[in-house]
Length: 283
View (tube, one colour):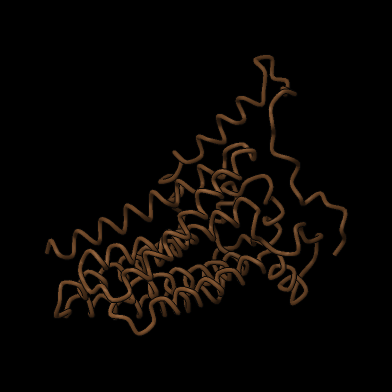
């Protein structure tokens, strides 16, 4: 049992903490973004090296390092997007009433560079690990990528809990691409397919013949389970975002610094600029 519990708790902690850390860093003043991005880029380079180094390491340690490296690599994409460095050619909201394929095309444009960067990273990671004894990092990245795309389509089509308050001011224009509704037709398909895949991963972990395989499949099953839960959080009437309320403290402190005791804004601090949604570019 310990062979399963250790990777499960490791994956859950890294998922919870890394998500909150990204939200926290994204809530700091924008003058700090360059340093966060620099650190994330250094981590990304280290992650690629770690994936290359563990490509033929079929040990429990190798499984842990490959899994962690894939998460760090994925974290770079999250940070670069939410800090506004790698987003897309469109950086303003849709006008009221924009619907259909035109609206979908605009949604693609707001994250096009982000999606292409993920594709390039996948190619690099595949080149570094394909055919090796340890492909845990590759499949971890693929799992995160697939569930990321599923979640994006679902919030675009409409879900109950958009959690738009987590978006930083400089990405406020993204709210025009989120739709609030109880559920959409894609959601049952998303959770059904992902649940079947998760069940297969659980079976592989349960029947694994080596400690390395058991650890690796447990990592993949755990991260898939978490991604499925995140999908359910989008439609269930539960305050799941409360798990990361601590990460919003950076925005609360920044707001406090931006105001004097008498309630007026200070002029001697660096503040987040107005949302790009006010751009004059029409649809």
